[in-house]
Amino acid sequence: MRKILFYSLISLGPWSSARAASQETLTVRAIEWNLAWNSAPDTEWNARVIGAVSAAAKARADVIIFPEQFSGGRSLDNILDGVRAAAGEDRFVVLGNAPRRAMGEDHVVSRAYALSGGAWQAVDKLDPTPAELTAKPPVKAGARLPLFRFRGGVVAVLPSYSLQKTEIAASLKKRAVQLVLVPVPAEDERGAARLSRAAAARAVELGAAVVTAPPSPAAPSSYLPAQKGFDLAPQAPAGRDFRIPWKKILDLRASPEGSTEPRPFLEASYYQVEI
Image 1 (cartoon, rainbow, N blue to C red):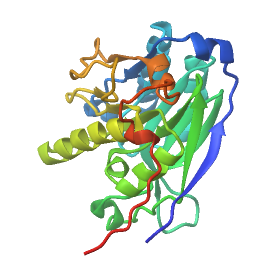
Image 2: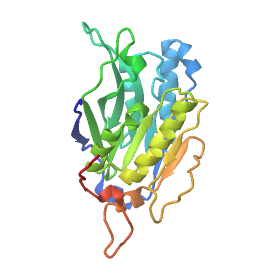
Image 3: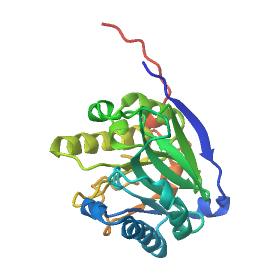
């Protein structure tokens, strides 16, 4: 089985401990993106991306996430500087996966970019779909998944297909990930059902918030831990924004004295399996 290296880029960008300790909520904006816009000229398309980030920043979104394949095959490299300037300081931005081919290589990678601490980090898709593996050129699987530190917690960026892999979920659990951001491609009904079920399971397993960001017209979703003090009803976004109870999620890692509430995401049990 292919091994995946989780490396703690756990990016220690300039975040304030005092702010992280006092921040009750995070606002996560899942950008609305109409795939028909991908037929626009590059200058117009670039302006739409940067404008969406600028609008989210002005609305005081803490985290901004674009869908997977929102670029329509365009390279994301040309907009990184403009997006970083529009985002401003101390904001986490995810540009969903797009194909990237290095000169002289016979394959592409499906690469997302995460802006953390004012610097961009590449996040290559760990699990290409069967269609991507047989494409011309084929998509090569990534080997490393960076984790990021943001506002006192640990954040992972996973495309929807990787979110469904239980071995990745187990690794995220060991690393105490508290927010999972999921860029989502355009999906059929079965794909959307697999994603929603996997996202709900990961929120329970990890004690984390999981936010999915599909392209329009599909709606984004947010899933929270099923623990005391959390609203167990599905969370409805305010437009494309979610209010994540950040302090409550951070506090889950500190088990109160005398608590008897089961917290499976804190357990590190190993089982002998027999048939």
